[in-house]
Length: 236
Length: 236
Image 1 (spheres, helix red, strand yellow):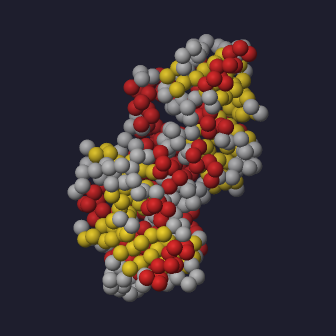
Image 2 (cartoon, one colour):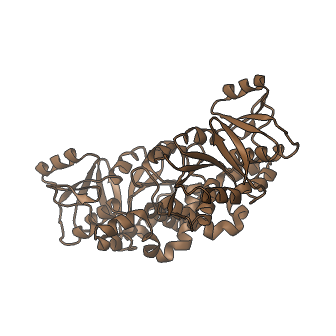
């Protein structure tokens, strides 16, 4: 049986050995949900950047540029970090450069992994099917919030741990705890997460539609995968 | 209403502001449980050390010395990190120098707090009563395991958050998650924690009695408190 473990923050990822593992990077509100929305709506590939200026420079190469800081679209950028904005038009064959507060950092800190996937509820089942086809250990790397534990990324980890329990054992305490949490609250995830600090921040910004999208299961039969330094969608 | 937050690892404590707060340091298996057992059995004060040699040097000053590394008593030390060993004789008025893997580190990283308490299940209700008498914000600092999240410290945080919900709001995601976990599993905590990685390690070492002690609620009406550089018990 393969193993599954959870890391709650990029600030703790150095404690984990990533070699040979599939690392699933998750930043539910909203970076990884937005990436999945973008790839499902025509974006051919996404390049992620930790800093704003490297991202901005990609416009000259014909990329759409997307970025937020503290929940707001960066001035002069085409898009922010709203998944719903990507649903409004089909970006056939376009390339996207993207930077976010927490998600990009988590991806860049996952580079020792054998494979890096992008986790989001709208493609949860496809991600599960893909992992089960690979027979590798899994580490779920929660982007968290400014280094801290957050509820939505952790609940996603619990959902994944629960769905994988026939093929991946969760001896890891973080995985056990989040599996229990998902068993208790998974049936009413929107209601439960409405208490979470990040959801409250987003509600205050009037972006309920984004929250609804980010917490919708299985819209896409597509896996988001980091290949080299770009992120691509793969039907699965 | 006061606030309550949870930090799952000493490696994340730098993300929290401790000023003005009561920090409850918790290392259920077994450092803080052992400290409470010691203070309830005659030990007048405890001094904690991050390193072995400083602790060993205290013997010359008449201290009992206690320490473990990787779950075993350090060679030449009077005691290890077994709470049950402290119940065997009454150490009237003796002083104790103690070093452990994770717990001591968490205490030393909590020094900016207004007050530091030592958390354990055997004095949970006394700790709750004391906190409610103080009207301060609370941060529960889980010692974790080599920097990682662990289940037993986190469940204690959930128990504390649950008991304090009338006086301390848990807007913090970590507190919310652990309160939910305690609501679901608190009635069968020994059974649930038998799945946890640390409990398995202890079971392999044949110290079931310690596990039972560490998970017993409310044996003592005493609060463990750090005062200056020593730790004392206070009837409450």
